[in-house]
Image (cartoon, rainbow over all chains, first blue to last red; front, side, top):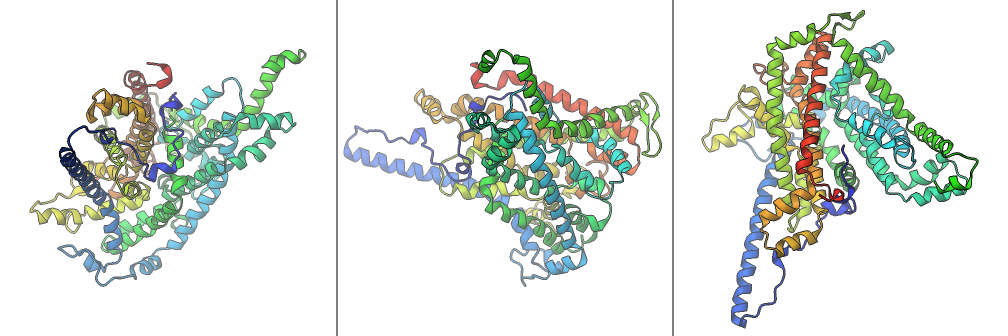
Length: 324
Length: 308
């Protein structure tokens, strides 16, 4: 967002080390050569071991307590989704569903067009992924691999659109799309992605393109390759990991997006998952097991996706987040 | 530029112009998108804010009447208050919490991967799903929170359905999903050179001093970036409140946030001119906050390459 020096940040920290534990040497724990008598040394060592054990237990205690707080809502969600409607409301609370009921899922899917919602979401994601991949990579290339006067100023203008509140453009856009006859469908959400509307993706790709040595492009230029060829045949193939991150984040963005569809999609058959999910709260508040089954069905795919793509995930966050 | 000396025929300007043309060609999708989806609608919003407009027919120019209407609008004032309430508590709290968790997760502890994953996962739960989960765990009579509270003989409030507690409950919901800034801080912490801590320890700095004098200055640019982003986002707080509270803003307008009211004015009541005036005020507000933060940041943000 503003000029932040790249040196300050962990640009060179291998991103997979961020979730995987990295062994850090604690300055206080360094082994010191002791000149004390053997018996003294032994007792000192014992007390040091004890102190370290105590500190370690303390750290684990704090971490476990906090983890429990963070995990409890999700555990409670999944647990409730396997209960009967009565058991969900039972007081004192029932921790383990008994009987373990699977039928909430098929029942919920039968009462609301859930497969339809999933399908709509996938289509929405697929189209915008294509849009973002094409436009953001082109734009990012223009902002990183080519030198032209005013480039960085224009780039900051693009970054500034990040802090522009969405309400500042919403009404005229709505009126415009209405004149195009686009209201009710996904076009208002899809078309802008073909015009570089995803600042996040462009920013991420630019950061990545900057790390590719300029000499590669220069060598190709000397060989007579034109710029578009260099972009398509040299830079893009090297940027596959960054593109994977962009695709992943765009998918999650669509999976999450509530506001866009809320404004433009009116027909229940066209609802994406987010709107469909919000629908349950109004209709089935009497059956919390169903509500939680819906929430679980929407959450589980994303969590599973996260476990398979952790590296890509963390790379995206740190590539954009720590380099302002 | 060295090549220009060789090709005397080709002036520098021509090469520069070629480069510029090529650059503009590559960014042209964004330029078109910027004009069409940002620039035009932004100025159109400004124009609409001086009109009465229902979306049908042409806007009728009414001068500053929307703005003077906002001045006397009690609901608007409530919305402004609620938004500030949420922002002023949520942003510092989540910043400190995210930073604190990142520090904890940066410790050399066995099984750290598991803790990191556990803290991060809530932030990827779809926002509608996390809203549903919180409505359920904070459900007044059957929710697990109140049931646990009653075990220790505390009468839990109605949370989302209490005028006093609705906003704090939304803040709790926000805190649950702070994984994103947490991971960013964690990455920044791992980028702080280890030697700096060793030198600080040699000079007798305790853990607190190391945090104050080494860690915070070193990651201050990242903190600034995250604070600006979370301020801008929380001023536009909307989705969770819209999903959870029905009718919007209930109970008793205690969750009527700025954008909630905007949405109601624009898409329920079709007061598009009035809503546009609100939108423009929001822009001014965000602009002021960002500029103030960036200006004051010179005092507390440390940029290594500037040699301060």
